[in-house]
Image (cartoon, rainbow, N blue to C red; front, side, top):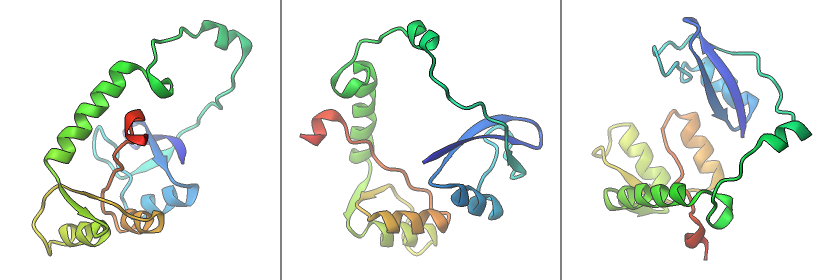
Length: 144
């Protein structure tokens, strides 16, 4: 994944995550990269400062209380709550996820929340088609 600093023609600054530089270029060419403030599709990469760790910056960091995996306990609890709500309000379509997501996107099936599994190449294909999907986080206790 690559993070770009972006700005629109109205000079609104925001960030975007893309699987590669060519992924950004492809999405931008199709008008899929838009400003979250004004909705403009006239978006360009902004100048970014490189992230350079220095001894001084490391000394200034304040440790936070952590749960398993180095993530704050409050964040894990909130993520767990959100994931539980998503699962409760979605239909689990299993390995049919790519097929069902396309049917919903193209109006061949009723709009509804779905969850399921997809291979990496299927995920890429869905995103290239402009189908909005997002992974559910795997929480520390889920990995056991």
